[in-house]
Amino acid sequence: SAESYFFYGLALRYAGRFNEAILNFKKAIRLNPVKPLNYLNNMAWAYNYLGEYEQAIVLWNGTLERNPDYLFANMGLTVAYQLSGNEIKAREAAAEVMRIKPNLTISKIAKGQKARNVDIKSILEAMRKAGIPE
Image: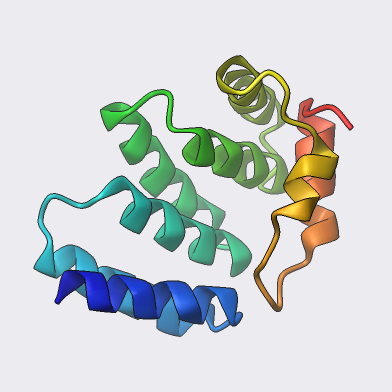
């Protein structure tokens, strides 16, 4: 089922096995043509962790076309744009994050990180540089 592939992909993502996670997310999306936003978001994070920012940006922008207030897509775009060198777009995405969740801070984000094999420091630094407060 689509959900089985999604949850397996999620487990692989959190285990730091990003390429395998992406394959499972793609299977889940093929089986569920509605393309749930959380499927796309998690696949985008896997691409982001692999340094494939353009792939991640396309997925996150697609989710925002369907739900402009999707916090996790805006957070992801903040990181992907900043790490890919597009500071202007990163700041715009960070402003959206703060509009959606005004009390969000870097320290709160850091507490929620669960993935392995991820350079959390660079992700948090990207968010910080883009304008997410400490």
